[in-house]
View 1 (cartoon, rainbow, N blue to C red):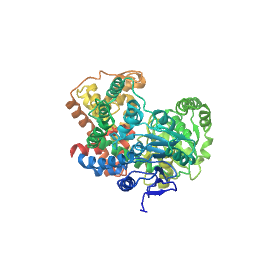
View 2: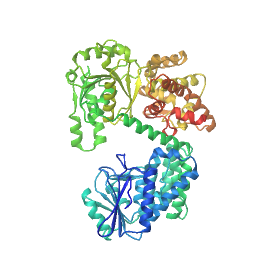
View 3: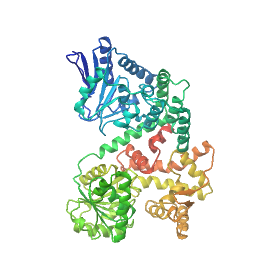
View 4: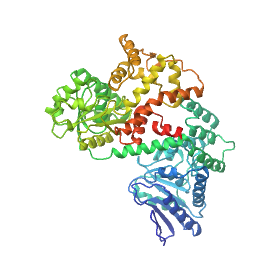
Amino acid sequence: MTSYEHFDLTVDEVGIAWLTIDVKGRSANVLSHAVMAELFSIVDGLAAAPPQGLVFQSGKPRGFILGADINEFASFETRAAVESHIAEVLDRFRKIEELPCPTVILIDGICVGGGLELALAFDRIVAIDDSVCQVGFPEINLGLLPGYGGSARAFERMGPEAALQLVLHGRPLKARAALAAGAIDHLVAIRSELSAAAREAIAGNIARATPTPAEDFATTIEAERAKLTARTSQRNMPAPFAILDHFSVSNIRKNNLLENETKLFSKLMMTPASAGLRRTFQLNDAVKKGARGESGITRIHVIGAGTMGGDIAAVAAMSGFAVTLQDLDPAAIDGAVARARTLYERRLKDPQRVEDVLSRLVADAEGTGLHDADLVIEAVAERLEVKQAVFAAAEAAMKPDAIMATNTSAIPLQEIGSVLADPGRLIGMHFFNPVPVLPLVEIVYTDASRQDFVSRAMFACGAMKKQPIRCKSAPGFLVNRALLPYMFRAIEAMLDGADPDRLDQALVVFGMPMGPIELCDQVGLDVCLDAGRVIGMSDKAATALSDLIEAGNLGRKTGSGFYKWDDKKAIRPRGDFATEELDDIAVDLLAPLVAECRAAVAEGVVDSRDMADAACIFGIGFPAFRGGPLFWDESRSS
């Protein structure tokens, strides 16, 4: 019998072939080129000498198939190369479909992308009724659609409505929802029951799901198109618009979808949006890998119960840490705990879980938690003398091996640590507001900082499901160093006569969550001025900010800044301007952001170009489909 590196093929006493995937050297099954080559050989052999039945399963202890190896996508340089590869895959999936024996696939974990496309080629799909079992098509998050026949086979099995939702939105379905939608045919309670269910399916005792017809599919398509147009453009994000067109083809049938899918996939693969999104996926994976490890931290003490400190404490408690929260004002602590309850009720749903998490968040006005804490996070006013006083007092009360972390957004750590007996204990953990939403945390260090403390802080952030990036202490670190000059460039352009609405609209069209003038108001003009004094700004911008602040116009929080505000929305015309003009404005305003990122890499403030781009995507909201400011700038210049 042929020996395989990534598969095991055995035939039992009744002639059923059991094909087990267990990709060598990987913790999860991924359909790399090497794995697919072996699968092609196996399928060709089964087609030439069909067994009495075929059962496909995973040999991994967790997960099923996570799809194709995204890192190999870059090897396809032309549409023709993409289509040639797809043709080979479609040929083997068709051979599985056409085997003259019953075929069953057993899903016992995450089955997405190419893994689900493979599953859809089998006669019956059996899975475990467990939350770890999910199926879906995440390709839209890479600026693509399924490429191995997934849209066509999902349409055939599930019907047009369910197939469209799975392809267009990229959200996986848990086992029971997948069963109801027709993506799965049968569920078993536990993993050990899968083999018996496979034999039942081979015997013809498990029925195939029936596709659900759409009542008014054209209306569904147009409703999805309207929602899509309201939040993005076809120029920026071509894939979702292309998917709607794909499912809108006249006389929608499986073969039509199969043929069109290959052409569409190869076209989308070559778009800048897909290149940017695939890079963002890789950056996300790299940042998460840097956050995996044992921190040795179980107790966290937070000093400062304002918005930032209270939310840091709330997220830490929700992530399993025992948290004490200190503030000079007991009312501030009460307010923070009340906000935490609201967050937990929204995120956790289950009242008992809410109470369990709240029990880990302890009000500590006297600061007794300092004595036992493994990590102390300071989140008080952004003034050097205040932070120095807090740390000088805390150092005397803390365990000698406990980490001291400041949430400063711009103050150099060397200045804060100058009052400490051991400055090596001090690092920065710069969270971004709102803490429960924004994933980035800048982990800041100095030449004196203990590197094991830096690593442990990274791992603690990973436990909080945050994305930490190392930054050497320098004014503004990375994010504010890059972001503020961009905002100040916009202020200066406005003071020179540019229409602020035009400036903001240019960056919204570019893909930023909001324009720079509106962002100044959102952050707070007083905050912008304070940070600008640390990292540097022009006299013109400083004067404009000072004048507005003196008049009591601080931005959104006072209802007026550069714009008037209606609660959470800036009152601006949001005019319709020429695209070329807006493109030129975006390039001009982003120039200082790009320059500062490049300088930060050259100076070693961040570890790499990748980390600079990642910080801007996860901390600033730089459009994921552009792959980061340095990637975007280099791509447009090439």
